[in-house]
Amino acid sequence: MRVKKDRPPVAVAFSGGKDSTAALLLLRGQGHEVRALTMRLGLPGEEEKLGRIEGLARVLKAPWEVVDLRAAFREQVLDHFLRAYRSGLTPNPCVQCNRYLKFGLLLGEMKKSAPNGLFATGHYADKVRVGERWFLREPLDRVKSQVYFLAAIDPAVLEHALFPLAGMTVAEVRRQVAGLPLANVRESQDVCFLQGEDLGGFLARHLPGGFRPGDFLDVNGETIGRHDGALHFTLGQRRGTGHAAGRRLYVVGRDLAGNTVTLGDENDLYAAALAVRRPVLWRRLRSSETLRVKVRYEAAGHEAVISEASATIIRARFREPVRAVTPGQLAVFYDGDIVVAAGEISG
Image (cartoon, rainbow, N blue to C red; front, side):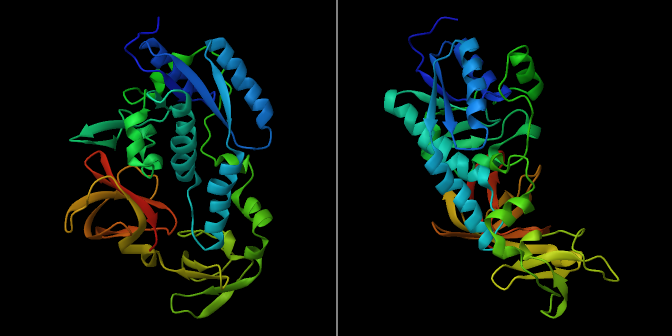
């Protein structure tokens, strides 16, 4: 289809997978002038992968550019990930990448050459304007929704953002790109920099101090056994603790500074409230209003009543206790299917 003069140019964050490829094709079909931007992150085997992406861009006859974000990726994503684990938190690197790289630096690269252009990604997400503000909204395909991972981006960037897959199912996307030489064929849920390595092995290489022997504690702080490193364990874990007991015990806490892991019953995993620090406020939250909050990438979320909301912290109480509310993960607050706040769980 020919470019329509009334359509702004669009830069597509292009990984060479089915989603970003479908996004590019859809936008071109709508009459936009499109170009593809691919991030260079400095990962092993990346040059070979970039060659495949370039080949796909050539087949699509799309202008293609590689944007070098290696330093930013290390600082904002990888180093942040390791600092968080060192502090006893469980971070989400995809949230960081979306906020600082894709919808930060990569979008900024688009604006350098096309100040009035738009920036598109292959995320399964949508946006809606309410009054004078843009908000993230759930897409048609709720099973594939990636809104949770986008909720911490700067709300101002939505004015320049497009989500072409908002009204599509994954089956429709696959049909859109059938027969193309995609650079990424497999759908992987793994963190990109793990490169197939298990998390324990990755952390052992980068944070060796977290794998020294330490104590298992009960919920009263009494020593009940020994473990071979606090970083081996995650909140809610039951299997693989190596601690024999007459009942099922779960990891209900860990202290990396003291190298201790606390074991307890399943009911010790449930929290009645949560606190979220450094929130991104998409709109002002009202004390006593009831919202739905997701404390991890999950389907439904949980009803919670806001007790405090400011630029530095959100506190809320769950209607029903919630299992394994994990410090370091993202909490996302919804009003219906619209995101109204997000931030890192601190407790």
